[in-house]
Image (cartoon, rainbow, N blue to C red; front, side, top):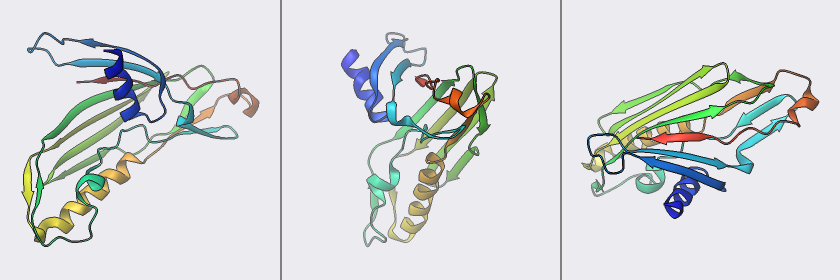
Amino acid sequence: LQAFLDQLALRIFPGATLVEGSVAHQDDVEQPLEITLRCTVPQFISRQGNAIDIDQLVPALGLRTLYAKAPARRFPLYIESLYFESTTFHLHLPDGLRVRALPFDFNGKSEFGEDLVRFAQSARQVDIHREFRIPVQVIAPEKYAAFVGFAQKIEEAERQRISLEATKDASAVRQYRVPPATGMLR
């Protein structure tokens, strides 16, 4: 289990360390599989004065990298695997930090599939919910440009940053470490 959690953490958060977690409902097919993952990602934030930006928290789906590298196609593109996931990440904020700006929600829906990312905040937490479903399909060469556009919009949505700020003076920010992000995969 630990090796699986390590691999999963590194896939979602490159450079993750101190990985720990658990799996729930592994033997109950009537319940959704839940994976709770806790890790530390040292290069996850960028600091400038009182501002702290959290880099890409939404893991990359990678459609463009996997299937849309070429500018055009002469033959159909076959997506041989179904890609689907429903994931919720909870980013817990320590005292002294608050949300300055959240990314825009994204709802990318097309004939090629759908990808939804929602951001919500409470007093001490930011929740990021992501769902995607990309079906097995054959994309005709004349529809390839539209598929590339769909993949590009998803990639742009994934690159949005969460911006935090210190509620005290700028020197207080140095005293805080942003806690590890935790996620629940369903």
